[in-house]
Length: 116
Image 1 (cartoon, rainbow, N blue to C red):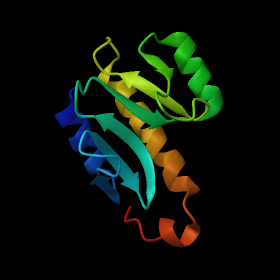
Image 2 (cartoon, rainbow, N blue to C red):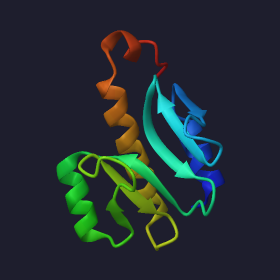
Image 3 (tube, rainbow, N blue to C red):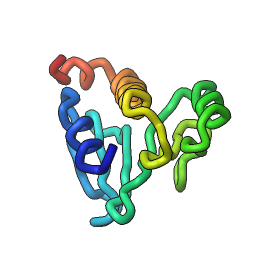
């Protein structure tokens, strides 16, 4: 998977927006006002995604391409390397998981505004 495919996959999810709140080199995807994925435009071979803390540990132990989130809360975020032999289906699953975690953390009145 490359950065363009990742971007397309994220933007097809209901209610997702993209932004550059940390400068023009970090593309951020949000649901509501909360971030669920970040990717650096330089290199573009890895991204940060939110993850359930227990699952994050399991993934890190199972895959060399998944490490604690770079510049993020390492309990809740993973850095995922897209160019290290991870199956596309796993990358999609990790993006979906992050999206759902953040969506479910939104207040009910904000969640209700997200088309499904």
